[in-house]
Length: 154
Ligand code: ZN
Image (cartoon, rainbow, N blue to C red; front, side, top):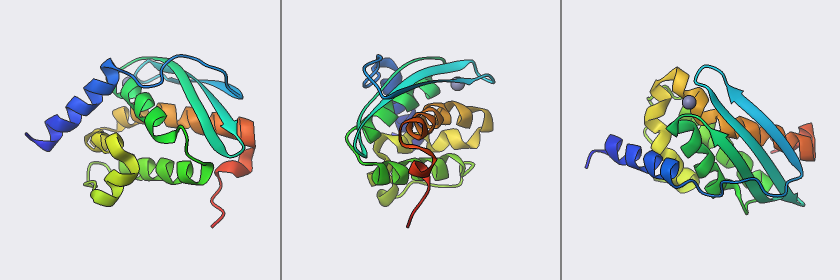
């Protein structure tokens, strides 16, 4: 099977069976819109100290934006902020690669199903779809933990 179609299957699977969908208790709620595509997400985060206890969301829009929110839930729930920052910046690096970055094993270990979005990075309009939920998570995190929470300290 070709890598590209395998990736499409992963995205489609998350779209059809989104992980962690639905709004649950959170410390902050944000609503983000991607007007170029019409995607919308309402996202809540709940922290226990600096550990992400939950990321819950309701979203509507294209398969890429919805699958990305599902992958975000997989990757970020249960991890601490430092690890979440590393995952987020790795995903951002992939999405800004304009299709030039081929995920290696190290990247796959960090992003898991997130590597399926590698092909999306070729299409600037779709990159916004893929990043919508991640921007929402960053915004919600700053609301809970303050501006300093997402700045690299090391
Ligand atoms: Zn979209």
